[in-house]
Length: 125
Image (cartoon, rainbow, N blue to C red; front, side):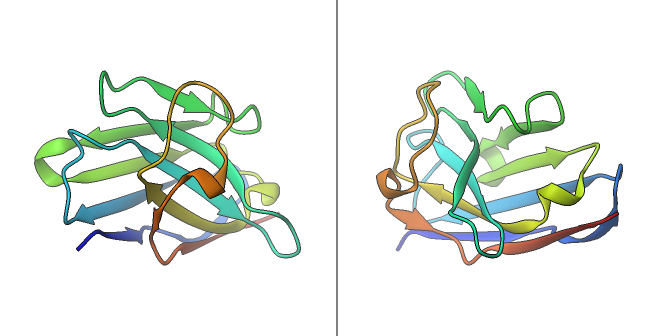
């Protein structure tokens, strides 16, 4: 059974950092890309970043490029999203997902089949 569990969210001041974790089970990271998405109140879900299963190549949305870093630890079956220089507009529920493409183009949530429950990130101004 495929499961994804996010953790690491919280409340931070603007300029602060958080590291989100996505622990997966029921499959291995060797074979499936992982995407991070976020959804702010009243807004559509937005693709933030992904990491490919083939060579570890990554994609970042323009809004987070240079501030967020995605990485994976195959041994722990965990993907991380390091978020630095956080802004109030980064406030959202963050989700990880799998079984979708990570090819360097913007992420589409409907292309991902399995999702975690989300973790809240709140950045105060």
